[in-house]
Image (cartoon, rainbow, N blue to C red; front, side):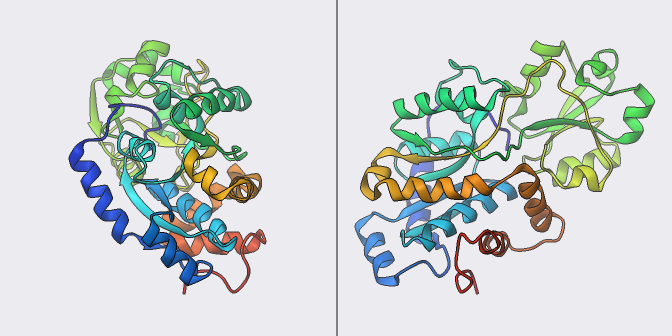
Length: 323
């Protein structure tokens, strides 16, 4: 995920690719009246839900898209678009209409770093809503669920160096290799933040991935000594890894918060936000971690996992869902 900012603009080539993909992207299952959806697609009024390039984000895109479809909104999903540096500008430029975001990192990106996020979810959301408004976006209500950055080591590494918090890395980081998303050296909550807040400098940085599998493998094999994962990653408990406490308060609140274009909200009215808010109200961190495990550990299709959870929450009817 790498939940923070980098470049500010989407390239012309990326815009073209996204436009082509949007024309061919998947519709979200049995989505309300087919004629309505087809007419909306022809007129450009379908709500395209985009995701970042990691499994949880794809899962969340289907969660929100399927809930909207159950209310009769014409929806299609464009998963695995890429990093925030690609996805959020696509949202602002109108190539997509909705993205399930992470509050602290979205605030940092949209405000160009001018509005620091905090560990307080309510304060972070208020700042995000203001920054989103200036960008022509609306921040729907945040979910209780959070998924933030976690600095992780193996249990053996923690025991060997007596590591309980990130600050404890101070005496050993210069001998250790850090692994995380390729964007990590530029992102304020990754290497720059670790240096600024904790004074940490590592022996080397090894780019791994944003979703976790490569980072988990690199930690287990000893290729890296410290890794950046996300707090809902089911691989952390499965592999008995240790999350180091962020006692310096580097990481912000990262509540799941749908961002949607203001013109889309104006087109569909308050029912649209109400449908999104109903999903968010039921989405807890524990529930999200469980859903992630089904996708990442048990290799279940994220669309089916999303539909199963929505049915259990009475957010879509029993008959709706992928086949």
